Length: 229
Image (tube, rainbow, N blue to C red; front, side):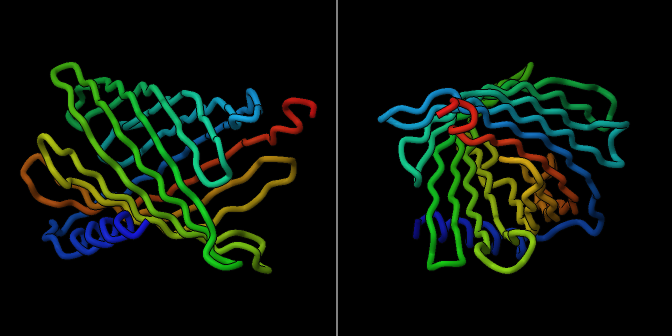
């Protein structure tokens, strides 16, 4: 936990201190996530997650990036889960030459509470990325804090995620978010609205910053309802 926190702080400070160009892009991301319970046994809970997100920006003609992600999630304890996902990603390059990316992801996640009102979530991700002309590895780490058990009608949160491509680009992206999550009527449904500030290194080794509005819907029915127990 301490090492992950230090790495995230270094990434955030590095993103703030690195030079950037004057222009920044504006994007809108809309996502839909389902986590469907499959089996609950003594060795843990097994679910299947599906995630779709569309990313739109003025530099694209319509949807710029469309990602489909699917895979099993194993949760042996309330404080740890492990996901394994396969991704198909459509990329509409600004120059008008669309391409595709395929990913294999391994995603360990730890979570816990600090006192009564603060929940932390630390998610790492190991990605093997496959493009038409090359393959690469990327490591990601996100630390998130939720303010819980308050009188507010929503759960405020902040998080930060660092991206490292160890064999080519090195540290090349940082994402910081602030937002809120609302529980919707009906079991297991929630809506998340957030602002994301993203730093990314372009092909010229110059850092660009983007301002992103994110709207995500989650459908996570409980095991008791899904299994009839």
